[in-house]
Length: 83
Image 1 (cartoon, helix red, strand yellow):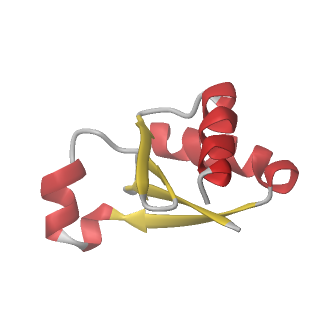
Image 2 (cartoon, one colour):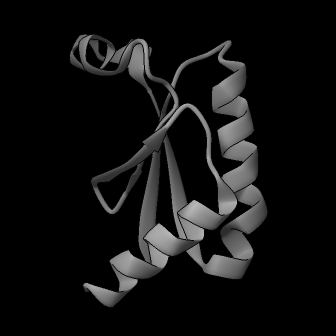
């Protein structure tokens, strides 16, 4: 099963929107979602502070700021083909 990681922070409406979009596709596309609050790790704050939410698929950068459902589907499929 693929792991989709959302680097996020509290009070971030774009983060909430990205998570909601991913949840709406989760059952159909069969992937796991992990949310990481960057404010709990200074290294992540330094790396992602102005870009959250940042989305990774299986540890590889996918996108930031928002989730485009069609782009996400395409990227997820590519990850599955390269496994």
